[in-house]
Every structure is written in C-alpha cells, then in structure tokens.
Length: 179
Image (cartoon, rainbow, N blue to C red; front, side, top):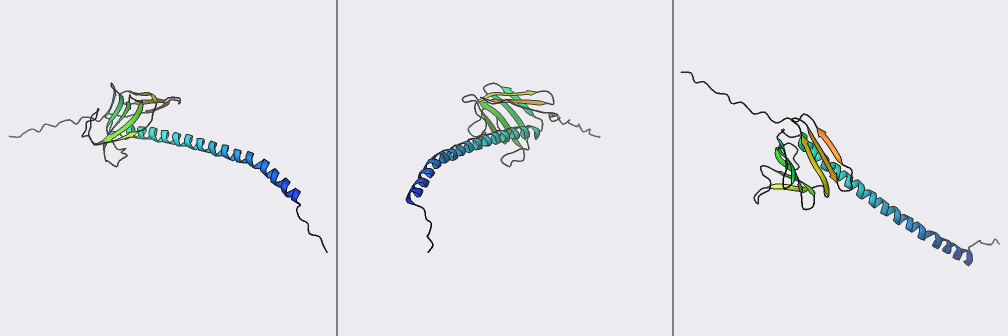
C-alpha cells in the first residue's frame, strides 16, 4: 500500500502565520495605491475642467463679431456683444466674463441682451468657472487681445488672439429724388 502524503497540522499553522504576516502590508499597499489614483484622478479632472474653461473663453473671443469691451470697475469684466460660441444653443449670444470680488470667482454670463450689473428680469445663464482667481487681465489693441489668468497656487495662463476687428459701421446711402 502506498502512503498518502498530506500536510501536517504544524505545516498548516505555519502557512496561516506566513499569510497573516504578508497580507496586512499588501492591503496597506493597495490602499495607498487607491489613494494615489484618486488624487491623480482629481488633478486630471481639475486640469481638464480648467482647459475646458480656457477653451470656452478663447472660442467666445474668436467667434465674436469683434465688438468686445473690457471694463475694470466694481468687478473686472470682458463683454462680447455677439458670439457664435453659445453653450446654450443660441444663434448669437452676448457673453460677459466677470470676476466676483466676494470670492474672486470667474463667472461666464450668457444671454440675449443684458447689462451688468444684472437686473432681476434679465434672462441669462451664469456659469461659475474658476475660483481663487488672483489675476484676470485683458489687454486689447485695435485688433489683438491678450488674456492673462492666474489662480492661487497655480501657474499663470496666457493666450493671445490676433486680428479681431470691430464690425464696420454701414454707411447710409442717400437717395436722390429725380424730379
């Protein structure tokens, strides 16, 4: 008769102890990797959101008719009279980018016809974008626009758009009456 080989009780106990010694550090390692992945995901999501905001601002200016105003009074703002870059499906929208002084938050205001500060009956969409803004400067020449944005603890973001011209005024043609 052949004897069957089996694990002894001591061998089983030793293997349980070894597994007990190896598993806690592995669990800790998996937990650290999971936390690291969550932090990377949040960072990438924040960077993508920031990129989307900058792209929207860029396209608002680029798609404009050139009628752009820059005001620095109660709150810094960039207003575009007509842009084709509507986030809400409007053919030509008025868009203003303004910094709210209370919390230095950059907001995008889109509507048909409105003036800042907004009135109660203005029908606009307000999108809160970047927070903790330290710099929102717009410099404009006759045809070029330079935008500088900087959030707290972030590198500044700058971009320029060239050859943005104001719409030309149409000349009135006088008709001569023939007698």
